[in-house]
Structures are given as structure tokens and as C-alpha cells.
Image (cartoon, rainbow, N blue to C red; front, side):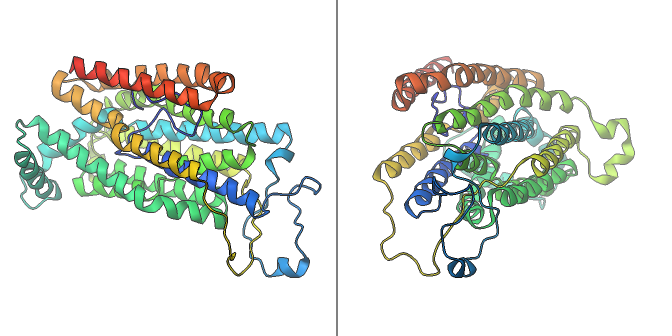
Length: 416
């Protein structure tokens, strides 16, 4: 997460790498969730207060013409406290596990690339060597020097690939969840994440590792769907409190996940059993295996505990003649949020490369640094943001967060 991510109760996490794009998905999720809420109210999609939860007011003949593939959810205002608490708890715990598995690779990335450079740079036809030549050309074009910069630029290219793929697929994931249901699409995304972790386990060749990042980028919709689920079950009065839990999950995940990654990186499975090398294991497969186990546990938990929350959609076969206009405030908010993410949210990805290049941090030191940032962010999100949003308002909390963020980056610039 950004060292000084704005402490806001809006759906902005204490942020994952934009190069990996968890926080970029938050920008997409913000618009999708709020548009879904606005559309649900303007089109009469939410159950009327006088009806039973999930009961349609449309005529049976019209219902026969409407395809629905999800179990209708009740109006958030009509959900009982127990159901609301259960769904919120499920989303929070599942997202926490997801962030734990996601952050495991962060402290390992610089040395992972060093490993591939040692093993594949001698082959001029390998994907690593071909890519490295392009990195060299770019480095010389910008006037860069030093071999460590190769790893930094290489990591940036891989992270940008992940982000670009997520940028392409995120709107489709949002639309698909509106048609098929949040839970069903979330489970599809989880299957993609599981496949990505499996590929990392057997990623002894560099091209397999790249393939794992491609699969991960194309299936990364967990955060935006979690925000959509929270939006489905909350009202305007309770939404800030619910979405703050998303940020808290990010903060806790970044506190523990990098440390776990650093710990498992010290255990080379192939060293314990050399025959495992024939399966494609690399020195970091233990970390990948642990991430795989976390994702598998998350899939089981979501399948068992998460109900469908998509509100009933009642749309005619013909598009509305005068669709409801998009609120101007929402458009401005989305633009501001996207601009912030574009400029600042790559810190978590670039920071390990900075410490690797300037200070030669070990895996343990990288994990400790990211864990400290996560610990501070967890305290801010859990202890300050949720309370301050109700006391002084969301706008004031956002402004305070941006000011604190600017101060933090100024201090970081002075140190470096």
C-alpha cells in the first residue's frame, strides 16, 4: 500500500501496487459499485419497502420475458442485522486471505528476477534474454546506467503487464457480475488466481512465470467484486463503514503477507528433494505453494459462506428511451481517484526495488518494511478512518489523507 494512502472511507484501500493493480481495481470498483447502486434505485431494481425481500412487483407475464440467473437479494435497508453482519464478515475474511496470498510475492520480486537472469541470460533466444535486450535499449534511451537498473526496469515492465491486462478485463468482470451474479463471477476469478499460483509453483522457466502473471492479471477481480458486494448490502448511511473494512483488509494483508513470503522464500523445496526439479520447481516455489493453499482455502470458504447479493434486476427487453444520466459528482470523483492511482499507487511495487538497489535489502528486511507500513495503515484504517468519516465527513477525511500523503512523499524524496 502507498506509504501515505489517503485515509478515506471511500472504497480506496490502503493500496496495493498499481503495477499489480489491486488498487487500480478499486478505482474500477468504485464506479461499478456506485453506478450499480444508482441504477438499482433509478430503475426500480430494489425491492419496495412494502414487499417481501426479493419479491418482484412486475407482472408474471413480464417476469417470463426476463432472464435472471441469480438469486435476488433484498433491499439493503430490509436486511436483518445478522445477515448483514455475516456477509460483511465473509467478504472481509475472504479479501484478507486474498491480499495475504497476493502480497507474498512483493518482497521476492527483485531476487526472483535475479534468479532468472542467472539461469537464462546465457541463452540469447530465451524470453528473458529477448526481453532484457529491450530493457537495455530503453535504459540507454533514458540515460540510465548500472546493472541493478535492469532488474528495476524489468520488474516495472512485468508489473505494468499485469496492470494493463487488469485494466482491459475489469469492466467486463463488472458487467458479467451484473448479469450472472457477484458470487459466481467471484468464484471464476478465484479459479484464475488459483491457476496463476499453480503456474508460479512450476515456474522454473521464465516464460512460465510470465504466463502466471498474465493469468493473474486477467482474473484479478476480487477487490472490485468485494466492493460491489458491500455496496449491495449497505445503505448510504452504512456504506462508508462497510467499505472501510476493505481498506482494513488491505492493511492487515500487507502487514503479514510480505513477511510470510520472505519466510517461505528461505525454504527451497528442490534443495530438500532434488527430484522435484523435474516438476519445474524453483527456489521460490515454497512461497508460491503457500499462496496456492491460501487461495484454495478462500475458494472453499466463499463457496460455503457467501450468499448471492446482487439486487433483483428488472429490465425490459428494449433499452430505456431516456436512461438515467450519470451523476456529475460521480464522474468527477472517478477521475480524481483514477488520477491519484495513476500517479502514486505504484509505491508498494517500486519500494522493494529501491531498497534492493540502494540498500541491498534481504527478503526478511523487505518483508519487515512492508509489514511496518501495513501495520501503520491498519491502525489508521481501523482506528481513525471509520470513526472520522462519521464525525467530520468523508470529504474532510479525504483531504486530510491527501495532505498526509503529500507530506510522506516529500519526506521520502528527501531521504532518497
